[in-house]
Amino acid sequence: MPNNHHNGRHFLQVPGPTNVPERVLRAIARPTIDHRGPTFRTMVFEILEKLQIVFQTASPVFVFPSSGTGAWEAALVNTLSPGDRVIIFEAGYFASQWQEMAKRLGLDVVAIVGDWHSGVDPSLIQDVLENDHQHKIRAVCVVHNETSTGITSAIPPIRQALDDSKHPALLLVDTVSSLGSINYQHEEWNVDVTICCSQKGLMLPPGLGFNAVSRKALSVSQSCRMPRSYWDWENMLHFNKDGIFPYTPGTNLLFGLNEALTMILDEGLDAVIARHTRYGTATRLAIDSWGLTLVGRETSQHSNSLTAVNMPTGYDADQFRKIVLDTFNLSLGGGLGKLSGIVFRIGHLGDFNDLMLIGTLGGVELGLGRMGVPHNPSGVQAALNYLSKVDLQ
Ligand SMILES: Cc1ncc(COP(=O)(O)O)c(C=O)c1O
Image 1 (cartoon, rainbow, N blue to C red):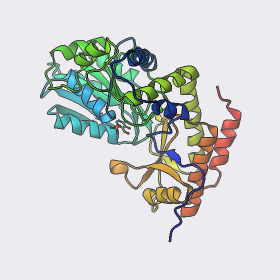
Image 2: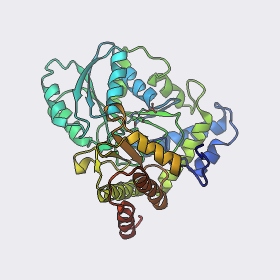
Image 3: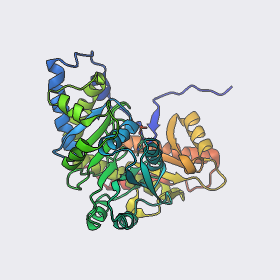
């Protein structure tokens, strides 16, 4: 009989949902209140203001009771009309899922397919835009941090590609696994719609989706004709002006959101980003020291919120994750889509500290040993050496 008993606490190191801080859990546990009452309205105004700081924008940020997938749909149905042409750069599994959604919604998708080992190539987007003389393409959709590959694409060069081709298409960016952990500036980078959700860098359970929206996107939404009701920005804007929502919101998740945003702003956005950079670097040093390799080819594109690791040939990544979960009570992310079984992913984002990182890397190193995967048992030490030299901010 297998012994399923575990002492101590579970290590949740999938790249989202992430660990929810005690402070946030306690906020969520408060009694539910009237979602049209004065206390609630005051909180909503606070939340909307703090969200603008975290998304780095003075334009509206909409909150939906949804997952990230709902926030993708909200972005598409508020900016497009049936049959509109959109570019989606497929640099990994999540971009491919977004593409599937766009097709199901009846959009005409121009897919630029990457190799899943590097990020978005702005020059390929520029080529397509420059050949679109009649400006039939209405939107360019990219994922900032591809959670399936651990690759971050720089957004400013993509914006530049749109500007250089003098193309009026909107720029839609998915920041599901980057906001609140990797530098992201909605307004400065001139993004039209930023998509996010609650369960990663924002340190909440799943259940809230976000759209940060530019003035241009808001104005386009006035005339576009995709059917929409639940996701309608205009209706949301109308109610949000009074600190309420068009329907019953996720009241207790909003308590949690208010607390989580306070925590992020108290720590300081720059410090949050520096902390994630430190953990990304320490993790990559451990991987390198074990003699393993990353999915991402380009060093400059390695993600600081998660690390996707190639399992050595002949070893099954899912079997490895099972051993690590069963033996050490540590959840790691699996390979998605065509990376299934050959990749495992370590989440190092959200409410996370030095000792949690060392515990996580310790579980990986022990698991490699248990499974008999050839490696140098020096990864944890490499991470420790780095952490001891590079101070917390
Ligand atoms: C980059 C990215 N986009 C979109 C999604 C979809 O979000 P959800 O599962 O909350 O619908 C995910 C989920 O992990 C993701 O990582």
